[in-house]
Length: 258
Image 1 (tube, one colour):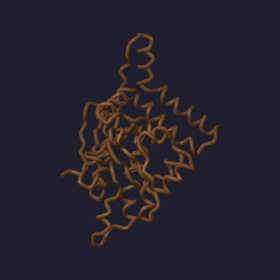
Image 2 (cartoon, rainbow, N blue to C red; image 1 turned 120 degrees about the horizontal axis):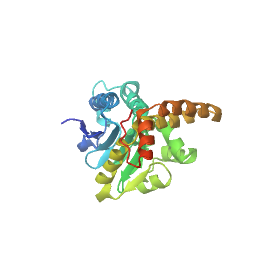
Image 3 (cartoon, rainbow, N blue to C red; image 1 turned 90 degrees about the horizontal axis):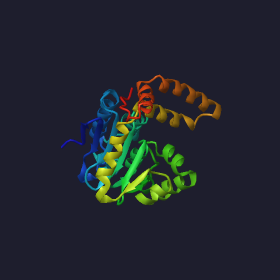
């Protein structure tokens, strides 16, 4: 059974974590497969948005602990340096919108895999847990970077130290995720969000992503300069010309992501 399911549906890449018997927990082969798929998503111009979800009851339960009990198990340096960190950076640097559709529990590195995505939506019955402290570990996969920026230092510290389960509704209410959908509507609604993004001026969306990511380390003066630089790029794009022309002609624009 393939651990990562991948298909292009229109302009959206559908990427599904597929080890449901172990709640889609990650091992080395799965990590390598996910890296390969993300490379395809970055290089294929026909792909204008990415939809990331899981099969079964979970989005992702983090690291498969069974792998750490094998003879000659991987070190944490190997796991993080060769798999988790590259995956997080691939998603972060992908110049296309990435939707995490959290279909169930997202725990440990699985929660942080979701949180690095651009828009995170969840089914009503989903939950998030920073499970690391329960086994004496430190949050990884970018969690100590993303979570304080999403919910504030106090909430993030409590979530990471106490390892308490956060419901999807609470996650939305504290600004950790974008939206929650009823279980019966989740598949349709979350997919519709990815499809909508794919029809938008995705070149500009990639620049928006770049600007947001840079803002934490910038002064206001630096961020204003970056906005000006990026606006110059956006203003030279095919999509900007199409957007203006469509507005003047009172029609729906047909963006190309260029």
